[in-house]
Amino acid sequence: MTRTTISVVDSKSLLALFGPRDEHLRRIRNALGVGVSARHDSIHIDGEERSVQQATEVFEYLNHIALERGEVLESDVTKALGVATGRKSHVAAEPIEVHRPGRQVVPRSDGQASFVKAMREHDVVICSGPAGSGKTFLAVAMAVSMLRAEQVRKIVLVRPAVEAGESLGFLPGDLQAKINPYLRPLLDALREMIDYEVLKRLTEQDVVEMIPLAYMRGRTLNNAFIILDEAQNTTVSQMKMFLTRLGIGSRMVISGDTTQIDLPDNRRSGLVDAIVRLADIRGCGQVTLSGADIMRHSLVAKIVAAYDASERHYPR
Image (cartoon, rainbow, N blue to C red):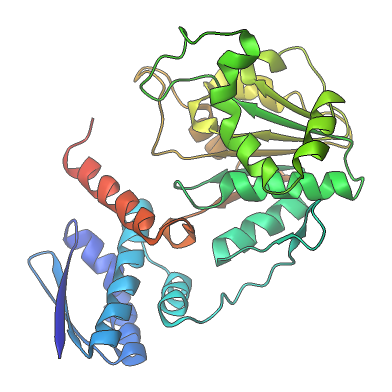
């Protein structure tokens, strides 16, 4: 027999994890055959080693969701059990075809599948979620797919030039050299989907354009797939400016992580504002990804949860 303990932030999170009338708890116990008890804001799991490991993964996933949303749904439990026991996601999504022959981008979680579905169905999509949940990669894949299918004529990749605690102002080189560090994550995603020589030609022909947000002012973009990455670092006025660049036949995807805002404390995030302001506008889709959608190294989800938990104890 094996025993392990998981720390939970507070009794409220514990209630969310166990569900109304302990429904989530009973479901996890029955599915994995483990004993679960709670004491002093900690969860204790007993059982066979493999089952305890699976239950630990389930509760860690759900604990992150409880911290992020304040509640855990039945669908979250289904997803967590599926991941822990190796079952596939129950939400189907068609693969995204990209430029490289035989290369497909396949959503790997329910949240990612919902994001892909939203991008196919809406002209404007707002996606918020933690690092590693696939926001940028899936948006770039959809842009490449639509360019390949001639549904758009141009891809425009945009980022606000806000430093994450660092200063790039003294970097050597021209303007392009200075802004490249901001745009590198978008370029890395593109290079996974388009051969280097093809991407170089598309960039030279201005079919693929990567620019800082400030350079969007005054433009109207028709028949383009426009991605605003790191949108949590836009101001409200910058977000309004960006959204109003949408032209005929264009699509927009706005992605960001509302827990990693690098703006001064007195500036409201344009992403946070837009999530509320555009909630009821037809044609604007919204998707929120969670720790269950993180597909980087297995430690990333745990690291994100640890920082979320500590920030609730020691807020900035």
